[in-house]
Image (cartoon, rainbow over all chains, first blue to last red; front, side, top):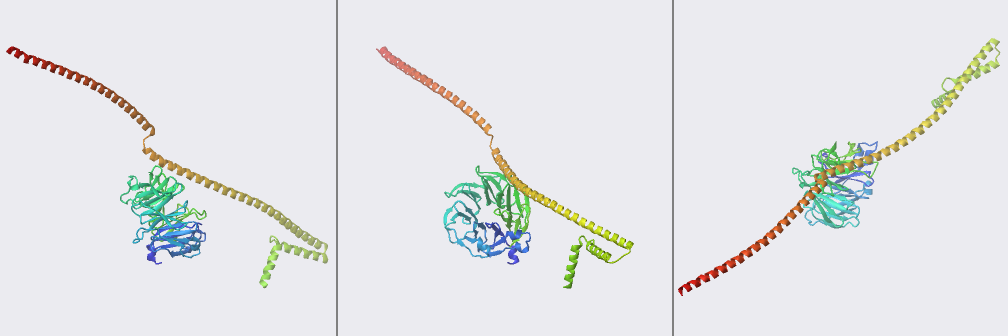
Length: 323
Length: 202
């Protein structure tokens, strides 16, 4: 890969392996790189261990979403989802286990896939993207069994509430829609941009990040990042972050958020920004926490750079992995 | 090959030598001078001095042996002591590990509490935007009372209206009746007057 490609690279998605020892990252050239965290974090790590152990082209378009199941890595490209076995990836073999396409209404246009999540209860894969619809795939048979229609513009992000079995989706139309996964019917629709406290008309109304934690929901994008109480459907805290946020995660008593600007913001539920930790990319797209493995409990962030920053302690950058 | 053997020789000597005060050599010299003393005939003075010298070096040898013994015992004791310290430190490391685990649990709990408090605060803020339940209830009660009073007044007014309607009706019928009678009277009167001119005519 040449220096120009490296300069213009953006990392859009990340996923940790089920064992927690490897990290997969997808970029705007459709490549997936697999990094070994155990090598990069070992005491005798060298420059070489911060490079991927495997780098392969998975899709034609950018890889907007990566997801790990018990045994496979799922990657979403332009209109298709591929699965790669982690065991095979670690052995450096890059043959897709399967590739599926959601049932799109028109065959003329190939919509991108922006978000994928797993519904562990029913073993479903929930896919949202450029065709404004949410597609639900049965992981057992690999068939797309239902479509949730409601959004009027493309879908940016998805979240799943396990206890209630609810799917949340946020999109370019500025709405957060809540669906019942049992009946596949819409339950609620929150139009975040209509609430004065979080609206930012100068940025637009799109919702690009969505996260849930029991009765609480985090959402942001064009409107300010805000914490919502879902039972009362009201915004409780609005975080004073200047840029548009791309991904937010709630971890223990902290909310970690990334977006425009070269830093990870640590927020408290009360609505205060506790800290902003500097990182190497100038703008961040993705944040992932590795909680599966206690030995390599790290946070990784990626953005408009070929580097992926690794935080062993959440309050400072430890090292950077590089494509 | 020669150098190795030299090395070995030196090592062996050093081993035998003890703490390097030349004990080995001293014993050798003592043995040599003892055999010399036994075999050769000295004058009594010379023999005596030789004997004195031998006794002295024997005393020195005994002294160094005693010292070595003491040092050996000391080392044994020291070893025991170190063993004790080692187990102590091991124990304290284990307890420190336990303490760290406990503290980690504590911190987890504290974080949980902090999160819950913050969520509580956030919820409280939302709730605070709504008016107080007590006051609202009071207001509701007052309004209820007002409503009852008003409906009471309305009832009264309606009753009065009904009464007045009836009274008015009575009044109107009386007036009508009166009018009727008056009209009748007039008719009668006019009949009379019509009759009278005829009478006059007659």
